[in-house]
Image (cartoon, rainbow, N blue to C red; front, side, top):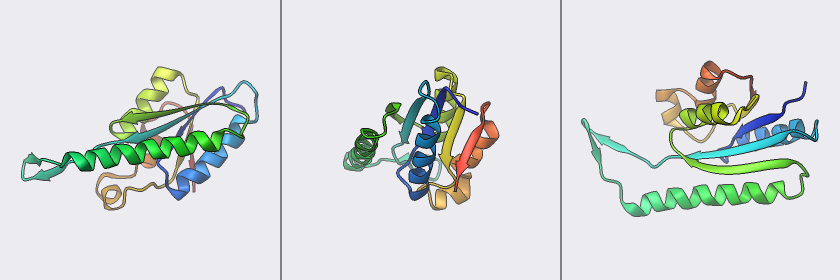
Length: 144
């Protein structure tokens, strides 16, 4: 089975790197396949009671710089792969961004690592990959 438009959700984790390798393999199966790689970042928020605590601008700046570095690394890795690929950096909630990207760009497969960099947040909110599997309208390949 080949796919025309593959979306790789990438967060820089070890499992995201394995997912990258698998997505590239799948994209190489057909010369007409386009690989889309999305790195989603979001600015941290701290709640105190029912309100939001202000975050220093330097923290948001650091988050954005790390996201840009991650995307630049991806672009360098793709140079030698000889596949059609598009890398995007998008701000927002990872699950929402991934699912919206799928709809807007007519993706027919999502490739994602089974666990990312979220730590305790994953325990509280549920993993991104789990939610994507539950909510996506297209097949999802979860890489372990």
